[in-house]
Length: 437
Image 1 (tube, rainbow, N blue to C red):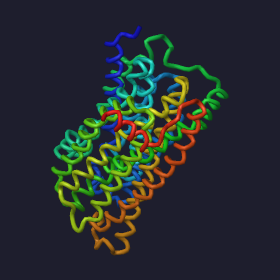
Image 2: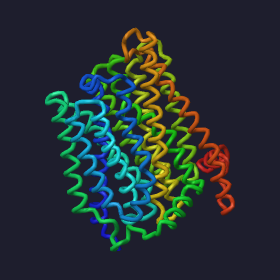
Image 3: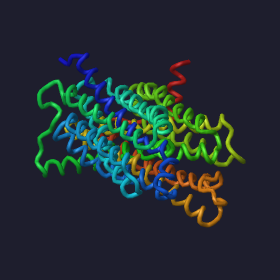
Image 4: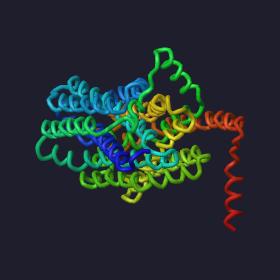
């Protein structure tokens, strides 16, 4: 019998580790303008900092998933916190683009271990029926790390400078490593959070997770709705709001804080809805993708700087994409046995960050090309240039949505073979309407 107090304590420390990881991930987003001056970087060079970080993050997801199944979550969380502390220290003392990129590479590697490990803790400590809600709460509480980077970290950066701000961030990860090593346990049972496998068995487990259509549906769900918010919060949102939309640094910070608060507010609602309507998870994801596309379309087509209400609508739409992408992990959980859940979760987690790094780098390249061509009139962050650069997101949204439709068909065919038939949405809505009447 699991002690509820122990379960909540282990989960709380795991969530704290994830919150700190998100803080380390997003610090560079609010330091972008300072980094341009410190390193003399162009837009494409600046984007490389975050692209490298996310590339390492995405590349390590499957290896981390395998390792967390073998070694247990606590070991991976402690190791990740240590790597992030070293990476932020390196960035604090870096005085060139190359040295700074090394720091972000280490931050990306440490960040890569954290979320998958915390999610891997949940099945050992909580009942299956509570999993969708706890998964959402893990994500949304962790996203408070963005508030830490937007408010106290940004204040430190402004008041005390680059080195002090990033060294303080490094100290936060040291504290996390100590707490995680002291309090987190992989399972209430000794050795219960680990799976002993040979190399061949590990390869078979990876292949089984990938060939399961439900895992791929989770990956494409994460790919499609996670990246727009990540691109906005980690890299281009702050420069876009301050330099292109001219909202001011205070309002930009307020909008990025709203981004986090909306995710916190809607995350539990999505988790509850998914728990009640598990057959409509992909429909929710596609609906969120459509709202994000409409919001960006409205902002980018507006003549002149967008009014504040329209920017708020954009931020809200992007914020819903974060907890919406967590539905992908619910696919990994329900379509895979517990023994390969870490591996399946790692595969799903690749999706959004792969899309994010492609989008971030593409935006930076387009901004530089428009600057070189004279289109931007010598202003790297001119509004017309940002409009064209940010439009590349529509291509990625369309690709991800198309993949969801294709893979969902295979998942439903598999479910039908097992006796579970998903009725068309219009029939389900009509049935619900008749029931309520």
